[in-house]
Length: 274
Image 1 (cartoon, rainbow, N blue to C red):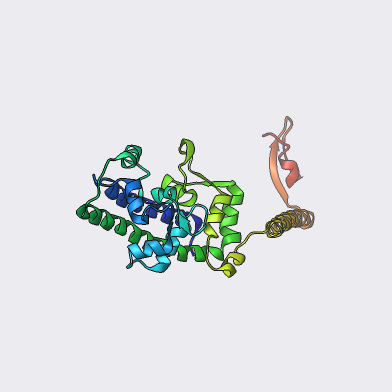
Image 2 (cartoon, rainbow, N blue to C red):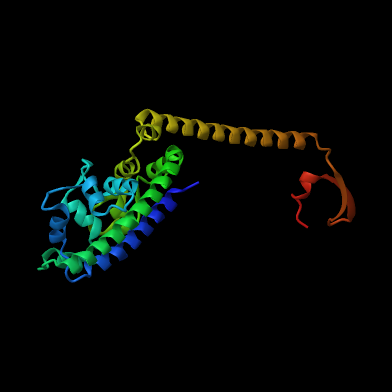
């Protein structure tokens, strides 16, 4: 059974490995982001699934769909330049990000082939890992009320590293806080093709209130049981005290006159100093 921490660790792993591939692409001297975008889209403003599949026909369709599910900011089935930029440009190196935006390049056949190879490697990685992520999401569906809901509603939000933060929000963390709000994560987690699955783990206000009521009754019952056990223990101790025969002990006490044998009950012995 997958846990929420394991889920975010997997997201972080995807982000770190993708970052290495992005850096490899951006380090090519003849790569410039908008020039490549224009060549890839034939000077169009958008890139859809069919266009991307035409450019890289060996990529699995399901994997390409997962890429669009993650990076399509307005979920209209098209990537704009900003979406594409976030998908392929390094997030760890601000200097390199700025450089690939303003490079003066002139693409030649050899250069475009090398760039395409690096882009294909990155997209192939995304396809593989995001399809694995899809399976992990489905494992979390059955735990949404008990695992995801509990974690978020207990802490109000979750702090992750900037790789996981970027994949969930597709934004850069302000002041390096890397705090994911429940609304952002829920939108990311519920971003599925299957409407039946969406309905399966949609959290309604009634469900949340119902869960809170159940937990409240459980705590009250637990507290009541504990009080009853304490009262029963007190009653048992009192009964034993009342029904236990008192012991009589003989001992010698030194007085001013002589040694005398006296008889005392147990509870009286402690009153003497000797």
